[in-house]
Length: 402
Image 1 (cartoon, rainbow, N blue to C red):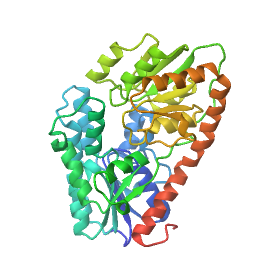
Image 2 (cartoon, one colour):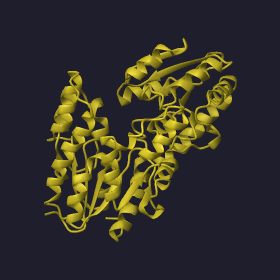
Image 3 (cartoon, rainbow, N blue to C red):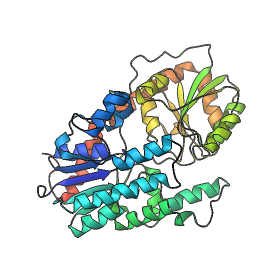
Image 4 (cartoon, rainbow, N blue to C red):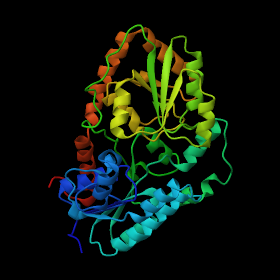
């Protein structure tokens, strides 16, 4: 039995869960963090880090989080990785991984005396049932846009999904978790809007922006803005229509200035088709580790994220921390220092205009890069965790400070 009044956190992946666990620890309220892996001595994550290299688990390394309060359950995650590597992944592989972790998590919570449990949408259905039986307040992180809002985004793009979209197993599991939650955690205005339009009251939603690690993403070593050379643009993310890639290609073809774009991200069959149709000034790179990605940011002038919908967009914060201004759509959740940095969704001409503006005015490019660096300092992990602690303190009816 854990101490009275504590917080338990559980998730098979990353998202905000590790920072939430650290925020609870800094409050003096962490009972237990249940995860797949923690990169720390004496943990499966620490062993894997020694084998694969420290860069592979950088998002699962949390200084200040006591290993003694962390319980790992790596097997669902390991199984998914092995099957994917052997190309034997089954349909709904990720969902099955989450369901397996959720069953284990529910069993763990039967012995918990916590007052608050923090889970993540597809990985919390059974855990929430047990948490409610034990009198806990259930906070649900919702990493994605509400499925009904997502369906409307697809329809507006001329790609309406089938009538059964909301009945797909993954979406049904999300909807059941939403219904069980006492509080929903969102990360941006567009994210919150998707739940408000689905009928959830504003009083049930906590909105907390994601942060960026300044020790990992920074401008030290950044190449200076160069006159007389092509503008070095960058896209980071999955190469899909949902990320707005067709409109990015359109912008590159329309831009009157010379622009070279690097696209970094994983490929599906859809992505391979999009890369095959990319303009000649596009260079593709497969996914890289976070330290390598930092170097890529530092070699470029501007990040473009033309997503049809983006819950937040961590790459936006990472790029700004490295000194890049950004061009993103009004459906991207990440905050920006100047709303003029946003363009309408599905508007290649607007992206081309912004790219041409930076290509023709390198002084403005440099000034906006400095503006981005100054702005993103407000979203360091410590500040974000203090906001989490304040909200959790209100839910528990206590002072968030230790």
